[in-house]
Image 1 (cartoon, helix red, strand yellow):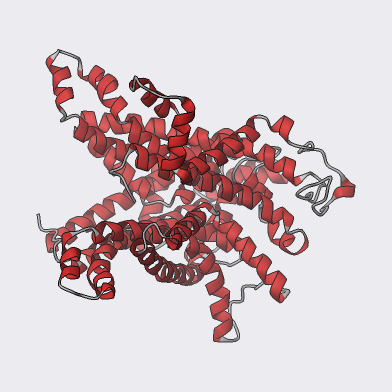
Image 2 (cartoon, one colour):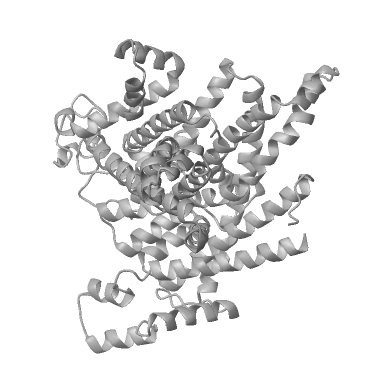
Length: 315
Length: 294
């Protein structure tokens, strides 16, 4: 157990190290940096001034030194300064994290609450009309872009309430807070719930065919007990493992949904930083995302081990 | 499509094409429905110049934000351009980007997967680590960073969407190759003195085609969605190409009040084509690769 944990942690560090190299290189494949962009758009070219900015930002250093500077800072907790706002990166990112985190957690809860029971119903009533309807609905859910669903929701708001919900940092009531976050969270979570539903359905179908389910039925247990106590417990395990993938999946949805609903979270901020070629911001935001994905995957694996005693990562 | 014709050639007593279609319709009704949707969109894309009622680029100040009517079946945008014509021409861009990216990503992925499964050793180990690194980044984030660094253009959008596909495809093909290379027919080929490279290309590669087709079709929907998201964020296919995602770009939030048709129809086109490709992907998976279920 302990060796497994240590090995996983080491592997995680290696992966994150790889991510940092990939991101660093990707952002510098093409020549052209923020100084070029600023000067091109301003139209005035004063080579001396440009050289000074380049030197100030450390863009004239060789690549490996730039990389070492970044990683060295990262390890000391110093994320550098934004090129655009000139504030420390951490001050820009930190206040936005809770907003996105709340959205993500709500969306995840929503997708599990909707996805798992519907998947079970669909599997238990395999090939019924209800099953077909649920399957087509879940497939439509996977086919709709989340930003379009968000726009449709905004449209419904305009139609029924006459206004669009506007993000407010300090909502007046608890109810306002909930609607403000719950509506966008549902827009993001819809896609994930469709995915979870499909996974639950196929996993449930697999389990329902197994011998122990037949045994449970033949000893006279009521159908509800067979389905929910015996089958579901086993069927849900493989679904749990996908939550790690789900988090990466959710983040993509959050990027567009925060844009649609105008929510000042980290996901939308990444797009803004990319537009500005704000390297320190983009680098750190992408590193942050990758860390979350990797850590969630580790936690999911550990939970899996605890929930399913058949699995022991001992070797 | 090619797989069905190949299957038809193998069976000597094949009734007729129509009987085949009838069988497919009964066996995979949803898959056939999906294929019909896809074929309709592909035809629209190819013959956009003939199908579209109006010029997608011609602006008309009088028709600015015109409601759906006889002249503009699905309304007109801010600049008076016909929405229906722009959607039909947009099919060209969306499908070209999606198919281009899928083919590019699957092709490279298959080659990498084949090499990994066959060569093993340090190459395999390195590729495994790199793909782990790539898979810890959300697809859209990866595509965003790549387009941002390459700059927005049609070609770069295709590259940006194709790269994140490579590790997924490579993994599936690799595991497939690992089991295939232990098969008796590979041993037989070895016994006849064939070179390893030739075995890999002539005997192992064709046997990975079924999972590859299944995977590529399954990815098609998500590549269309990724292109739409990139264009929606203004970092995908640039002007003057009409792209569904950009038709819905950030300004769309304003049109939610004033011109809902500008929001509803392009999104409907995206959803419909992705829905079609998902239905087709599911049916293909059931038909070609029954072991690989959700």
